[in-house]
Image 1 (cartoon, rainbow, N blue to C red):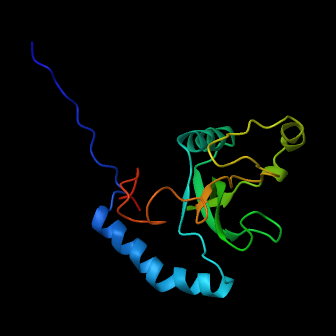
Image 2 (image 1 turned 90 degrees about the horizontal axis):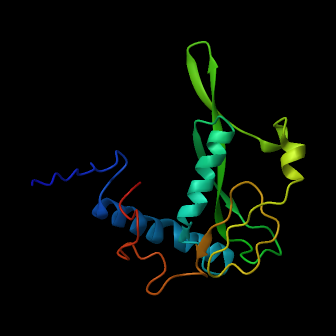
Amino acid sequence: MERYVTVKPLPFFYVGQQTTTDRINRFTNEKHNLLSQAMGKPDTKSIWYSKEHFTKLLEEIEYASGDGIRVYFGVYEAGHEFEGQTCLLFKTTRENLIGDLVTHVNVILENEPDFPERSSIPREIIQFPGHERMGDIKDFNLGSPCPPRCDDGDPGDPGDGGDGSSIG
């Protein structure tokens, strides 16, 4: 009996380990040091998100009839555990057609008709190691920044062999 193996092609956004390493090193050498010096402490070099986080994010895109995600850079507010450090914020987008021009507009949950009802229901919180206190969670900002929460080895090390280290 013959066995057939189906090999999945690489995703279109795959850029390879060398390009990934080069981009991380360029950030570390050109921007990270400047940000850290300006803050007076090490800034974020990477942010870890669980698979479940992305599953929930995809569910939210579907629920909102969205077409994608826009990622913003932000900075944690005064008094936050990671005060002053860079964070990522995910905004669901929805296609908006103006004539023949397709744009992707941010979905503002507070402007959605079901927001009052949705906001009154307790949220399901994803807990993963190191997140004892979640505080007031807004939008889709719930990652684990490095530093200070880094796996073993060099924080943000492009050679750490983590999932997706060669996508970008």
